[in-house]
Image 1 (cartoon, rainbow, N blue to C red):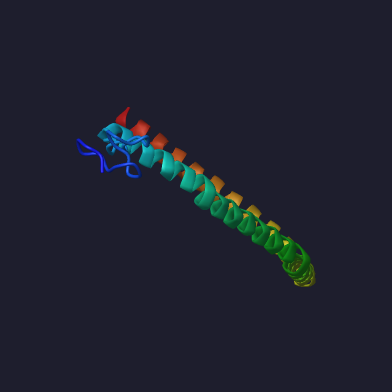
Image 2: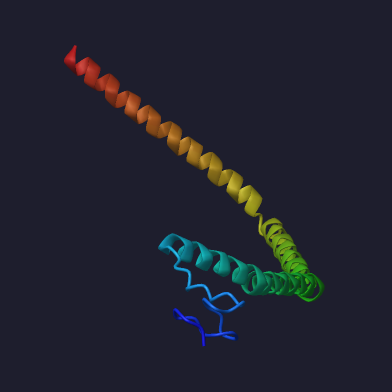
Length: 139
C-alpha cells in the first residue's frame, strides 16, 4: 500500500504509477440548465418531431382521400339533385305562366295596375284640393 492516502500500486495515488481518480466535477446551475435544454432539444428532434411530421402527413393523406371521395361519390349526387331541383323549378314556372295565360291573369294584373294608378292619381288630386281649400280659406 502506498503512503499518504494512495491506494497502492493498483489503486492509484502517491506511490502508484496510476494517477488518482479526479474528484467529481461540480457544475454550475447554468451549465446544468443548458445541458438539460440541449438534451430536451435533441430528444425533441429525435423522438417528437418525427412523430408530429408523420401525423401531419397522415392527416394530409386522409384529407386528400376525403376530398377524392367527395369528388367521386358525393359531388355527382349533389349535382344531380341540383339539376333535378332546377328542372322542377322550371316546370313549376312554366305551369304558373300557363295558368296565368289560361285565366287571363296578365290582363287582370294590367287592369289592376291601371286602377291603382288611377286611385293614386285621385288621392293626389284630393290632397291638392285640400291644400288649395286651406290656402283660400286663409286668404
